[in-house]
Length: 312
Image 1 (cartoon, rainbow, N blue to C red):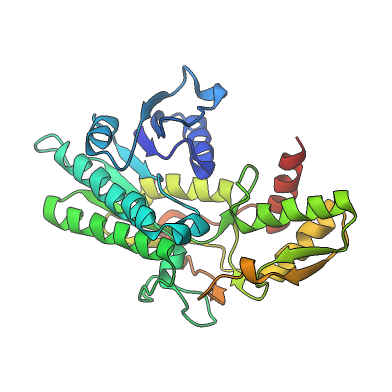
Image 2: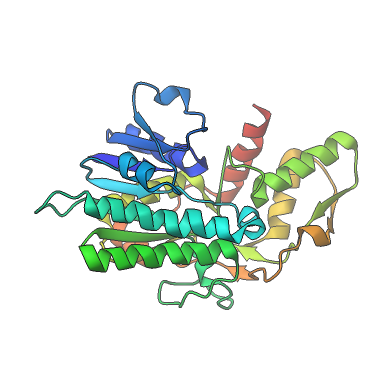
């Protein structure tokens, strides 16, 4: 199977590349022009530069014949999207529109073209009550990031209706693991906890610790994307989630225990999000029925591996 991966230089992308190569797929990987390419991939993977804001760059990057496409490239940081909502829309929504349009126009006549998995987010559901969310729940985003991701979904669906491009929407819920940047909650907690231990501080500044989130290991998410390429149904939308909710306070305490520090979290108004979603847990029964996927790595192992990676 020949697979094109956009955003292959990102946090999830690197795990996806490894998973694809492990099972023997032929991979073409797209990266930001200034990104560092993993040393292990040199000579084993074809790399192409991709700038989502540049139509010519997109057309060149996705040119060719592929069996599958995993579109991961995005502005993935919620804080970055809040700082510049227009950039989030330009990268996530407009960038995705350019990618799927180029793929549709690049199909050979008479060919069904590739199966295209477009990665959205479970955050598009917004505040949807206190039970695991399935795909029948309407999307009501409450952040620039989530809104731009829903825009990417709509651009994808419109292109599919007009051109016949075979597309699948993936809505992963929160995921973390070794190598994630501290723009995200688990590595941010780990960084602050290590700093507190080094300085002998009794407290750590945090945002609101009451929200409940559904954390999946990045390696399980990478497996999920591959499963969608093989077994997902074009035209469908699938949640990728564990179905287990964890409060951010519990996440903080687990990381503190792993790092070996006893501190108290202190709310910092500067770290509190407006319109934060109080409960965001996914129901992935539809995805499991289609692919047989289930998360394999428990959260404690994920957090242990994350903290160990930071000390390597």
